[in-house]
Image (cartoon, rainbow, N blue to C red; front, top):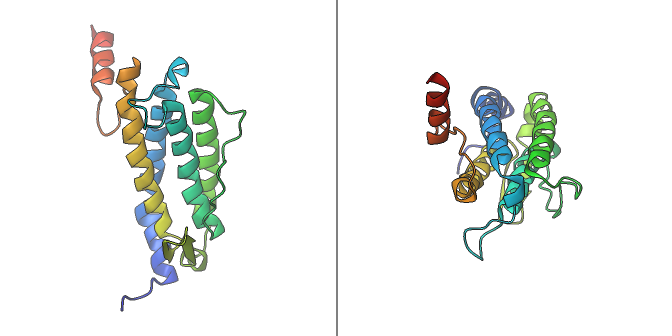
Length: 177
């Protein structure tokens, strides 16, 4: 039988392992959301795929939903999270950034007891709340990769994700010329 996570271990994990990467990845996520051309939101690479705007909304909502699951100790399965008034990629990115900042701040104040509370994920698994930070981050990175692969096909520039992108390198070279 596996050892149960202790409160001090959960705090250590959150504060010393998860929080830095979480903040860095949120900056990249915001750049990808902002890079979606406002007039190309309905682009999808094939009929079964989500449109770019659907994917952007999903990323922004789900990233925050996972964090709020940790904060609230329960996984919220309600379908809508982003207000209907938030429509454009720029509005989605701004909503994402504001909501993420609020959630990030709330995470910094969580106790070990809150972090080890068992959270049910849609009846499929039950894990300590703190583990949903990384699960959510992996989910976001996966969908962010999908959305970033749409960008060039939509005529947009791909921002740097993990190191300089081709488009950022070209912009840098042009600025130096």
